[in-house]
Length: 236
Image 1 (tube, helix red, strand yellow):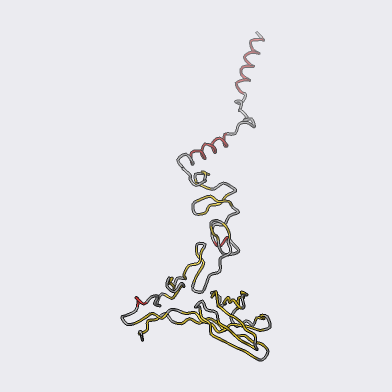
Image 2 (cartoon, one colour):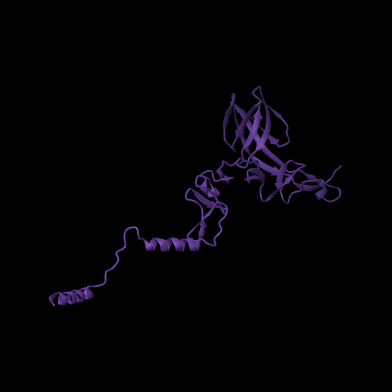
């Protein structure tokens, strides 16, 4: 009889115990599984191109690359001119701009006429847009006076100074100073108002009004002037 009461009492005690709770192990990570599923869903209908991959539903470049014009390029390469100390990014490489002649500008890897100028094949130079290039642009019985670049070059030896106007006409001029001869020809006219001359078969670049020693003389050029480029009545 006693054992019967003991069994009933045991059943009552078991019924009063709280329900056991399952404790998740370290391998059980429902939050991560939910996140993975969510990320997968975000990229499900995203199609990335040009080397990009889907990250959280958006196309992006890998960690070692950056976006440039909708393409992924190496982080070491430049994308715009602002990325370069030289101020020029050409084909994703920082490049030193080429120096251009008077009236030209460096663009897309080459020297072309500046915005306010056009190229005149007959004169082989860039001229102002409002200047004539050929006689055909002038009225009857008129001719086009070519645009001409001119500069005065001075050569000094002791107390003797000789100055002469030179033009871009592919001509060599002779200076004689203190019985010393100088054969001078201007070859390049630059945007910074400097000019390259060939003097006695030596090339030398002279800045505006900068005194420069050459052989036994001092030389300088007095700046560039532009003339011509207009229609004039033909006097012939």
